[in-house]
Image 1 (cartoon, rainbow, N blue to C red):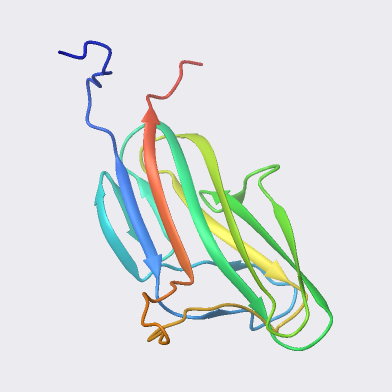
Image 2: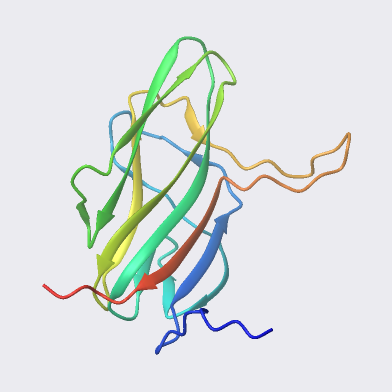
Amino acid sequence: MVQTNIPVFPNPRAWCTFADNSTQTNPVANQINTFTYDTPDGSEDISIVNNEEIVVAKDGVYNISFSIMLTKGGGGTADVDIWAAKNGTAIPDSNTRFALSGNGAHQVAAWILTYALSANDSITLQWSSASTSVTVPHYANLTNPVRPNIPSIIGQVWQIGDTPPN
């Protein structure tokens, strides 16, 4: 049986996968932090520049998906805001707030963003918290049982279409 309904794209689609294997901190309360990535895991027409900018090489519509491990030390509750910026400017309505309660509280921020981007546009993921006890941890050498490391960030970018006409 031959499948005839498989889409054929005229141009190869751009893609990139990345992670970070360090613990990222919030050194100054209420300041903008930019997430960094130290482990690009392959790409086509998308690059990671300065370990923080996701730069596309061609026009298109892109899905940007990620999961970010959040934790905090100390008691009480700390809010963490995470948003996207395009070419250095915050993208309207892209922010989400997480509340971390109690010492050692963990949450995973995970979602998919979709944007029309032009060649050489960059996307950065940014965050802020009033609490300097909030971190984005990396866990390594896990035992009992032995299991994979937990990156602080895991992400993917996929071109899902051509840029729509204006």
